[in-house]
Length: 224
Image (cartoon, rainbow, N blue to C red):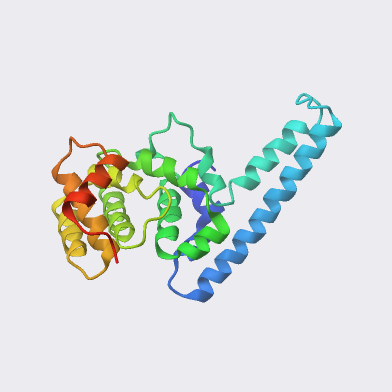
């Protein structure tokens, strides 16, 4: 169940989290709550057994309970995404579609994401690991969409990681989108899209707070 089909079997329902129809999202959120309750129950069983055996992992049932807990986590977002080791190349990881789904969920429905699945550390790691070249064409297209969505909203925690993603999927299409966003009436889009577009033109500059402040001081007024 470790391949793409296994991920779909466990988490295929999660596509409802990014649906436009509220009814589909509510159904997916209800499923998420059910899976999280099972995860909590499995964790409670494991921890209770561990206490009873004084942390003896060799005791009968302990390993089985732990395996059951991990199996329950594999059906929950974002917990399922934590199974990837640092040695796994994210470009070939079967869980990649659900990592992208997790980021798209925040981009399209931030309040629901924040209430039900907020994990800033997970977001930060995903953005860092996705900021690599040679993604498959469909993945590049999705990442381009995510960068465009990110620059059009008020800054959210760890959004700075989208600069690395933008640099990894740099293209004429992305630059055109950023240029268009920087010319809109949306003050956040003007500021953030302009900054990312500027960094694409200056690949040697680091994406640091100092560089961000310097660009703001020299290029633009503060957002309304």
